[in-house]
Amino acid sequence: MAHEDPAPPTCERLWTIDDLSAFLGVPVATLYQWRHKGEGPPAMRRGKHLRFDPDRVRVWVTTQGG
Image (cartoon, rainbow, N blue to C red):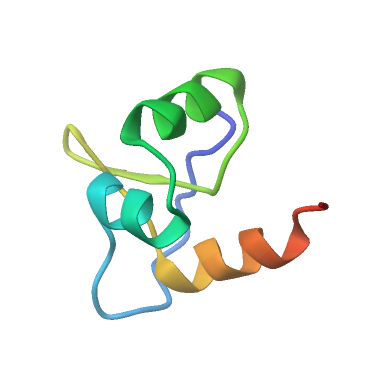
């Protein structure tokens, strides 16, 4: 997938999808829809789980128009 990022995280603790949902204020279902469409913040897969680097999420937020 386009959002898989093999680079090591830049933070000490990665966010779960629930953490990301709370930070962005959007439902988890919306995050999965974005991912399916190839949109949304970059994710890393750890086993069967998605994880998000908070630093990269913040960069993604600042680059979004609107």
